[in-house]
Length: 353
Ligand SMILES: Cc1cc2nc3c(=O)[nH]c(=O)nc-3n(C[C@H](O)[C@H](O)[C@H](O)COP(=O)(O)OP(=O)(O)OC[C@H]3O[C@@H](n4cnc5c(N)ncnc54)[C@H](O)[C@@H]3O)c2cc1C
Image (cartoon, rainbow, N blue to C red; front, top):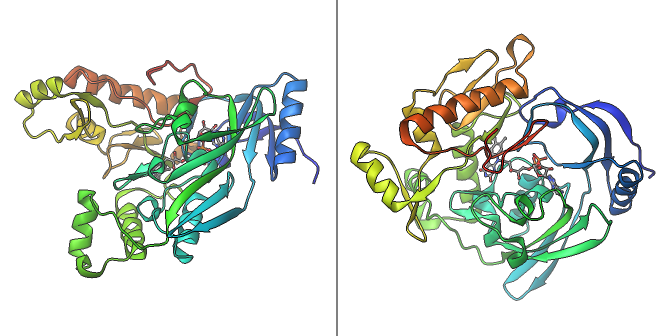
């Protein structure tokens, strides 16, 4: 099918925060040939290129100039070897559908990552993770097209430089590649990982310790997520709005003198992770409303667009985020970093604006 490039397309249906913004040029690509044609067009017309997946990790604070390419490439393939299988998913496959497909086929490892919104192609960008598992744990490689040249390149796990909600594609390779597909190694043995405390507690509560299948883990994760997080289809949001800050143990010790109840999770290299939700909650922001926007009443880490009075804008959302960041800074001297990618407004390297 030939490529259709349109002008002035609303991105409101394409972002899970339902923020109003327009793409100067927009196209949806369903195969690699169309993607290469779109990149040729962008090069010819000197247009900036923005890849778009499920739109669940974006803040659109203004219109996007250049060409937005919606990755709608579908399909998966696999090869089986002994007790594992390598599955390759095209960028446009839904992440959660992929998780369900693997479980149905008896391929295990993705169950803790059930119900994460978005598509396969974006999963490596921030090394998605939940309930004690992250993409990097199962990742083999990815193929990506270099935007500037149209050349296809392969990146193995080491090359992707995965870290906590971070990868090469947020740093040195930021805005340089469009991910075509990702390959994951899954197990054909039904092993489960319930090391994450909230998951362990849910397993105990459901009385499933004795005979716990990966399918049951997936269902429990879905249940926990549905009770903890607002559904973007009902109350638009982008999941966790801030990363959990990771700070030196020495700074944690000082904070513990003042806030002995502050939860911390030890990390390698004498560092500790502090839940950003706890910090925001302590500053009294849970449930706060600013016009159409607000901090979710049960989950301080989630900023939501209630869509009253025509809905909030990206700029208003960022103003609320700044208010939260200032409050946390004043009280704890910790700088919160915004997790979703901000478009349409200058962004500083530390995620501040
Ligand atoms: C309710 C909710 C819960 C969430 N829970 C979690 C969670 O538990 N753990 C977690 O890690 N994340 C979570 N997220 C964040 C989000 O789901 C993930 O970051 C997801 O991977 C984003 O996928 P997407 O397709 O929607 O990406 P998009 O939002 O479309 O894009 C995100 C970024 O990736 C780039 N991008 C997208 N596709 C490609 C591609 N093919 N090639 C190159 N660049 C690309 C975009 O340009 C953009 O910069 C949550 C979000 C929501 C709304």
